[in-house]
Image (cartoon, rainbow, N blue to C red; front, top):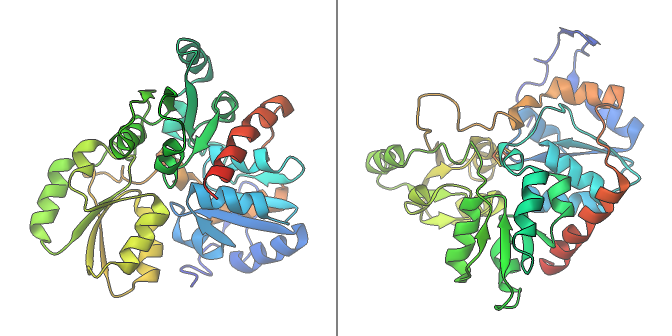
Length: 324
Ligand code: SF4
């Protein structure tokens, strides 16, 4: 259901916006033979107009299988890059090129190359939330949905570097009993949740189950009765008999949770301050207007040097094979 169907009218520096932005986007979609892929952390209007909504793994799989000529990626830069890595000959558009990711930025390529050189016998498993340059230096990519499953398939005597998220790395270590060498990166959003406020919420809502994304710090994860990727959290809420949930991940997912289980109550886990810093500032840069202009202007487009794209493709393909 579109939430603000006719509320997008206005003038921008690029020109007049159509009266009905949703219809205009549907028309452009047909003209371009485009598919709109959106992450669960996007604003509700974008989720509602997307052809496919998912977490990183689901979106990577959707990008790998699409027959569209143009992929409009409503997510952040590394996700659109992943779509381009998988689709050399397709046009990939990102509504706002500034939609980056603090976690991907916490792993600069030069520093990571030196880190890797210091551990020459190690296999590199990288979380998909990293740049194409880091993917190109990796042996296998993983997502929060399959990280445990992938590490479990690697021989026990093979030392592993896990990058760039230290919290997900620690979670994988706990689940697999493996000793991983961790890159010390983190996500600003998932590190912002306050353990103290979650405990207070649990006291205020004693029937509520706390659920969390593994990018959260250990101090938050220990209060969660279920830990999983964005897609796993969504499925869990739908299937659990509980009627109330405290949700420790980016609150954009609550739109889908509410759609799947309208009779249940979802309480966003509070950040440290009274700000909205539990919302990903990068994801929120994309708007329905920018999505329209990206399709209209066929820009901004994602492009990559072919040698980096090819090198980054191999570890993504390994992930897709290992998580099939
Ligand atoms: S929520 Fe965190 S990991 Fe996800 S895109 Fe935003 S900054 Fe990156």
